[in-house]
Image (cartoon, rainbow, N blue to C red):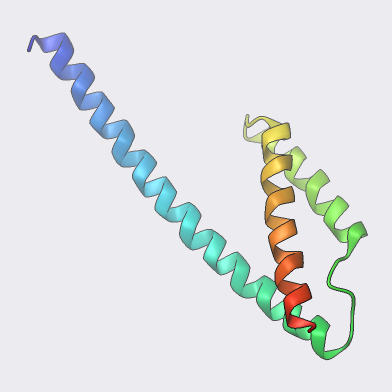
Length: 98
């Protein structure tokens, strides 16, 4: 293996290590977020509030699109990601109301 190939292999390892760390951060961050949304769901169920809040959801999507633009991330991807998370949260809230 020549020096250029060795350097490329080293850079690849470093990028992959960073990706692995970031994946762990994402998983733990999502877990923490879902702990809070579960608490919200229980509160809503206890007080017979609807499992979904369309105004809040629209606000959150708009906020995330803005953050994505600021972070140089595709806002459409960010919107799809948050929409998926919101749908999971609503599903959990609906389950708590039964």
